[in-house]
Length: 110
Image (cartoon, rainbow, N blue to C red; front, side):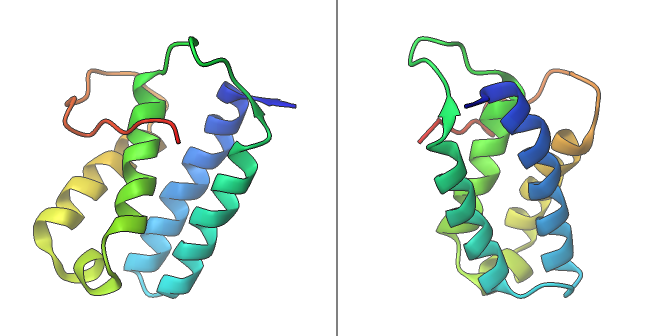
């Protein structure tokens, strides 16, 4: 079984890549949707405990993933506020630094 931290290290970088590729028209919206479902399937194989604390990076990861699944394609492409928020989150996921991040961008484990 894969552990949470290893899963996040790989998937957060992939998620950032997919979001940026979508915004730069290198992939279509359906690819984002497939990425979402593939990630959900992979998560089911992750070894995690219900009482294990969730990191800030993991919270941001789940927030971005859920936002991509929630909003329709046009909103993800054209809504300035949605894009600004997601861009901030993606930058955080790409960063190797751990710094305080607004709690409003906090997702939960599925």
